[in-house]
Amino acid sequence: MPVQNGGKPIVLTASRSEISRYSGDPFAAFMATFPNKWVPKILLNEEWFEAENLKDGQARFVPYGLRKIETILKDQFGEENIATVHPEKLHEFVGPNTKVVGVTSMDPMGLAYVSITYNSMIGIGGASVDEVEFRRVMENPALKKYHPRIIVGGSGAWQVRDAGKVEEYGIDTLVHAESELIVADLFRKALNGEALPREVEGSHVPLEKIPQISRAASYGVVEITRGCGRGCHFCSPTTKSRHSVPIDFIMKEVEINIKGGSNSIFTATEDMFIYKCGPKFVPNREAVVELYKSIADYPGVRYIHLSHASVAPVVHDPKLVEELTPILMPKTKYVKGFRSYTKDFVTVLFGIETGSIRLMEKYMKGKALPYHVKDWHEIVTQGVGIFNDYGWRPMCTIITGWPDENEDDTLQSLELLDKLKGSEMFYVPLLFIPLEDSKLRDEKIMPLDYMSEAQWDIMSTCWKENINVWDPGKQPLFSIAAMFSYFLFYRWKHGPKAFRPLMKIAGFPDSFLGKMDRSCDPKYCQPV
Image 1 (cartoon, rainbow, N blue to C red):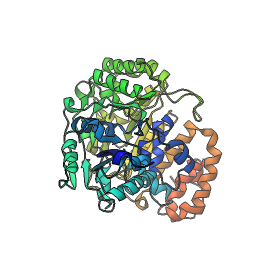
Image 2 (image 1 turned 120 degrees about the horizontal axis):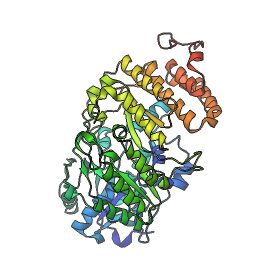
Image 3 (image 1 turned 45 degrees about the horizontal axis):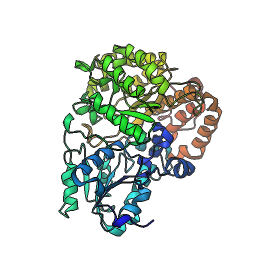
Image 4 (image 1 turned 30 degrees about the vertical axis):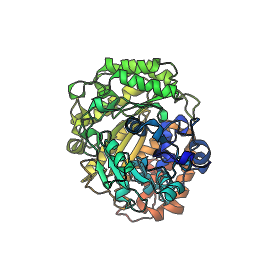
């Protein structure tokens, strides 16, 4: 189809991997962080990445942050001058009249936690799905033909600079952090042909300045809080003061999402339990329950997805989970028969991060509030137990390779994993990554070659537990895959330290592994 009326002056978009709704399952989006060579193309091309468009050709659903920017630009420049589109429709909206194209991305170069961890461990080389799809946008023929100004924002904008791709991709400006207060002026300069800064840093946005979306967002996202305030050094939102969005504002966005064709609502937050919380992060159960009951009762809401939580508030007030369960369980996407699940459950993501009290004290002492980090093991085990008692299966990140992490720190993490053995949860073990906008941005990533056997053991212990809890019937398949992959590839890629972790995933117990002849350098492979 040719360009419509010479194109829109302003066009907004995102890559296929970040605009997709992954058949309504937000956790499936993690697949886009894996190597592009590894992800089945039938899923990417036919099921997940198929464009969903409105009658006018614009995208039915786009990332929530892009909807916020869309609202601001419509207010400033008129709705008739803006199109927010799927990348496969760029050729219909970018033309001789197009002055500026805005692109949002969370992980454009595959430099986030999951991308780096699993790309390096899988070890087959090549770019992640997210990186490949972002490059497809930047190399779109319509952009090459008409040469509009290109502005890239989103939480991953820094990655483009660090990867040295700004000039190669023809990007005029990178926008970092919260951009609501600066984006109108930036796009005005682009429309007028004025010089643009190479990089712009956003600023704290007062609650009353946060715009409301005017069309549906992917998954039906609504923001319930912004910022966190716990002060974790490895994370950016935790260093920012928090807002709790008024319930009337949230429910208006729920309405917009449902009217726009979404049957789900995804509550975006750094921690669902800080909504209108008190001092020292003491949860406000009444406010949290009222919010989710209002969302669940809204006509047309079939599913409610949860993003992040913290575990300490659950221990402080177990009734939080007790009262939320009858509201959220009937709205869960994760029901018996979906994939290989044997029962209905609610899931939410929270960070264990480490079992080391020393590292907790140094880098994330606010994470345990309203308790002290010295009780972190007890907080985590009790909190997971409470979740499980009410049918919740949390997804939990745990990080190794921290700056100055020593063997005792690593062993404390393994000790915590041992205490959690048999719990109904899904682990996402990660390597430490120095994110650009965190306090630890100047630290270094620890290469896999420098990982100790105990650090490798964190990875294998987590994935072995995932198999046991989520799909033990597939253990024979994992056993065959682990043994073949080690002897045919990973012994050369990662060295002998990869032997024990892969054999653990294969199903061999520690007692047996300690006696096996591993034919490797003993300084790396001592039985434990």
